[in-house]
Image: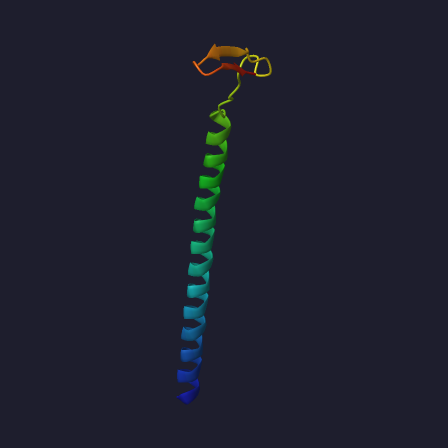
Length: 77
């Protein structure tokens, strides 16, 4: 009778261990899949939205400004 009870408890323990291991593995795969989908979606959305380009026409050639403020002539190069 002791042998049958020991075998039953051992099988129950192994069954619980395998069930928890499979549950952990499946949750890990699910979280990994969700994160992968989110990363791919973000990468694709950033490629579809071009970054703005800031440029000024003739940035090197500023016009020279000259004015008189009453105390002297100011030349802004």
